[in-house]
Image (cartoon, rainbow, N blue to C red; front, side, top):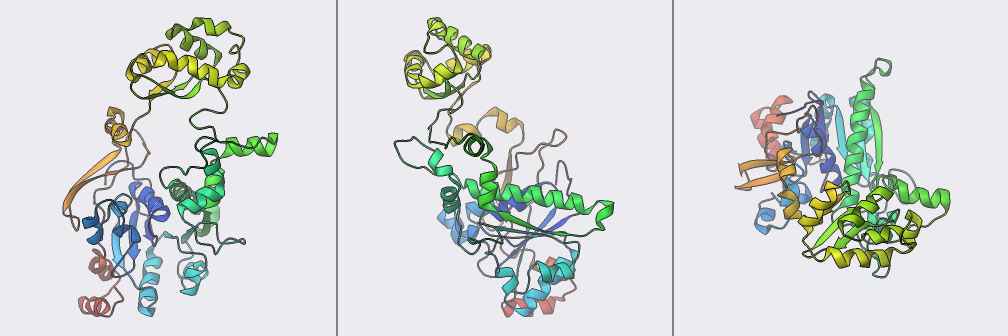
Length: 405
């Protein structure tokens, strides 16, 4: 591994599937933790069968899986088998963290919930990620990213008011839930190390719904404090104008002229200095009230030249501006390459191809945390991990033959 290793020496058991949990453990692996992914025999994480390349899905090395699991080890365990349960408990004895994203109650029914495992290891930090949390009237409801997006209110403030609701275009709720869990786990590990805590672990209950709503502070507070219900404003910043996306000669540009001096500088660049004294646009309040008219006047000029031209002109005078890029264009930015955002792995076992995947958005001491190993094949570490627990080769073979591994 390279870069900062703030969680070096920590062992994380990753019992999670698809995205929220794997994304959480993805962060922890890049910060130096040894992450052991505990998967169901034969099929593993569902994400192994998800992604745009069907051949990789059939190999159980789906792109969706590889995106979040570099640097982890994989062991397969049938947790419904008493022997599988005992092996997990042996792993828990040595672990610092366990992360799971089953529906509330599943781990208890397996007799592997926090009450049981904390007796095996009192220092265990146990993190349960679910759609709605471990308590409350909705706790047993199934939750997927789209369901949480809808219930959070996010979809009613995305898109245009007259075009109906839109989901955020990637699994935002899963990702925010996973990031929240990683933050909570890191905090719990720091707390466990305090002298007055005697090394005691903790139970962390992460609700994806609450995690998403917690990020909506501005719009939620406008409603809670001022009674203003959030609305869908499309690409416009609801607090200021001109602030949003505008059409140019070859695409779109984002402009954030939020301050008076920025609005005036914008007008000067566009040779629209007469708008500065126009009574419809003299202050933030008037510009918000007359946003549609102002946008039309600005776009009449913006369409006469290319996006890159205007980005350079505006930024040169202190008006924040940037192109609206496609995903491939964003990944091709020198800024992304220069800061080590992407990792490359050659001839990945199981996938039989080279891959590039994202690291984290973290930089510590000027370095991007990284991992050395590519995403693991299903059960690739069974022998090594069970041998370290004291199992012989013949015992491992029997466990494998009988479906425990």
